[in-house]
Image (cartoon, rainbow over all chains, first blue to last red; front, top):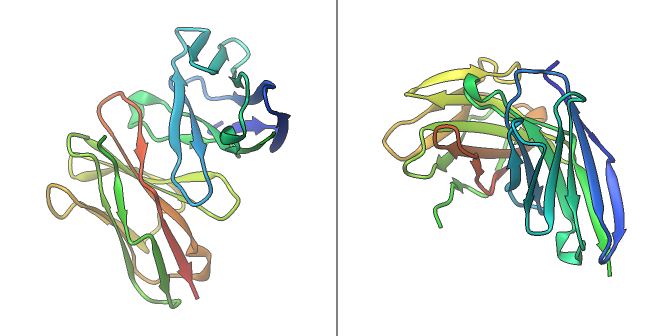
Length: 113
Length: 112
């Protein structure tokens, strides 16, 4: 019940295309859903996050879509660029319980020029 | 911009030796965490620390692990007797109340 399932494991997108990564969770106590971007040899960096009181959040080219009833959320990267090539992790946290993050398995995104 | 700082960036140690990984969280943050990432795998929670005590720990965080905040700025993870399977990237993270967690650059621990 603590798991966050992420797909796909890897993704190849052409420059200018849309990258879509999906996550699903089971624990209804989760109330904070961030996405992290990680480059090789670096720590995860927060990209965008959402709480379940909204169904969508957009920041620049990055959008989170959230479906509370389905317990799913996704990251859309519009106009994908080669510089977006990285590993993306979704995560979830029950914020009232100390805020530990449960991470998905990660998606390795490669944007081809 | 404030950041979480970790030292060393890479530590090589012999099996059975003790290691201490060090972190300087962002100064006004209240919650501190250690996570680890085995090569090619997901980031896994180890322990959370608030108000000078462990608030939660995972199954991975057994008696070989300990954390300490020895002064007002440092946050350390000690592994008493390292095993080969402890080889991983270890990330420190910190956050303010109900805000996003910021991660350090990590310490790559290699146990030989």
